[in-house]
Length: 305
Ligand SMILES: Cc1cc2nc3c(=O)[nH]c(=O)nc-3n(C[C@H](O)[C@H](O)[C@H](O)COP(=O)(O)O)c2cc1C
Image (cartoon, rainbow, N blue to C red):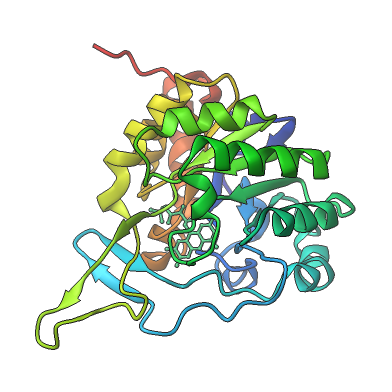
């Protein structure tokens, strides 16, 4: 088992034994990964995005491969907030890791209702997805303007005392301005990036590969974009940043932390190798021991030219 003594991170009032968290939508509710490792080895889990009512998601095909990445248009398939609270959360809370509920809505009222319901649970924090590119009337409508992002932050903030982390879209002109709008309305943290909007076409049929026509790009292809955006946001706000987008090795985790991330989520890489999060944690532990440092000392340590 990995020595985690140098890996602890305090983030928005929550202690993480290490910074590595499977990203929302790539880890379900964790159960199917317990045959590989105990969930307690993870810093935390960002569970599959939860909406007010059950959603079946988009029609298939919902996944397309891309060079060094993937497109998905799953469309927030999930069993709804009441199922999550009654059936999934109690089991997850026995796992000695931080549980972050990821929520999404089509309306401001839906975000409020979900946040109010979670406030009465023992979930550790709430990650608010305002950036899903795969749902027509979904959160992305809010996440692409400072007004929308600020509006949802304010509503969720007033609905719960839990730490609130706003998950930002990269499909914007200035992600730093959106982060500032969230900070101004009381967000405790921001996470980024969600997927980049993309498209692929089957040239034999002339049809888009995804039934939804477009989908979200993730995986190693987006990593440099994620590093750039984490760096810009970390320099623009005074709240902590949770970084993600294409992280697949411990070296990537160090890099995105040097850009300014305090925590790191790992998504698409889990589909290649379910062991990725614990391999990254082990690599970070070796790195800290060899350099004789605490991992937190590298956050934002990039020295720009
Ligand atoms: C299949 C799939 C489903 C996803 N579902 C969600 C979701 O429900 N909520 C959310 O906030 N992000 C969701 N995401 C986005 C990821 O959490 C993450 O932000 C993004 O994939 C970038 O990280 P990565 O390159 O490491 O995958 C999903 C991503 C994938 C690939």
